[in-house]
Length: 188
Image (cartoon, rainbow, N blue to C red):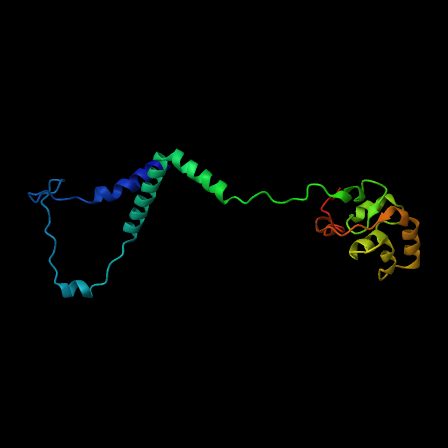
């Protein structure tokens, strides 16, 4: 269906135009009509007429010509596109492949107070969610004892934190993990 429409758009302009031969007879067999003669003043005064049909046909012809050119040069177009993609593609990002403190993000009995998600504190009874939430919403910390200066930390919560102080470490805050301390997007 689309191929028939494309062919119709390509050949419609050619079918509408009939060129008269030297004898003054068009190729359809009818006598050629002489072009009306107009004075220069008349031509300058008239508004040019725009035809939506001509625009559509011209666009169809242009699209058809481009599609035909691309179809006949598939391999060259594909090679050029591939070369442009390779040339314009950015280099490999310098991703952090190994984080030295990954063992302190919840995989051992030690938890990094600057980078671990609050879920890592579940292994310590009483720490999750209140103390873990306070630690996660504040910081970064310079040392483990900084958590006792968190506003809103009651003496009861400080005692729970002191109970597990030996299990807490304070590594420098890593942008890749610090942002996910409260909500890391894992909902299971």
